[in-house]
Structures are given as structure tokens and as C-alpha cells.
Image 1 (cartoon, rainbow, N blue to C red):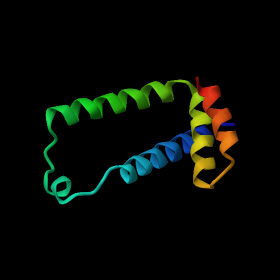
Image 2: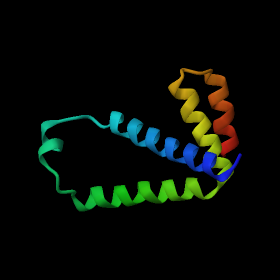
Image 3: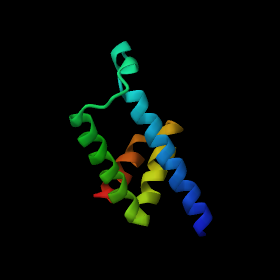
Length: 89
């Protein structure tokens, strides 16, 4: 796998993770109106970015994560997802 393919997979994984995160957040009028983040929300956002940085440092884990996202998107085998999660540990 060359560097361009890896970067493409990495960006797709980041995009899908952001999409899944956005879907998991409940949409309320209060969230849409309140564009100023509270200090607690800022700390939580920093923790999420630290997690992303940690996950993306290791190229092997990043590829496994990208595979997991692709398999989940395609409705793949749950046992395969569990096996890949085991490899991430």
C-alpha cells in the first residue's frame, strides 16, 4: 500500500467517524441555537481530538480502524468486526 492510498483510507476513516459521531448526537433546537461551546464541551472536544491523534499515530491500527468503518458501513459480519476490535487492543 503506497502513501497516497493510506492517506485516502485515513481521510475516509476520519470522515466516516465524524459522520457517525454527528449521527449519534441528538439534534435539539437548543443545540442548533447555542453555537458557543461551554468549558466542559471544550474539554470533551479536546479529549476526542487526543483520542484521534492517538489512534492515527499507529498506521496498523489506523488501517484496522478504516477496515472496521468500511465493514460497518457495508453491513458486514459482526464476528469479523469483533475480531478486528480484538486486534486493536
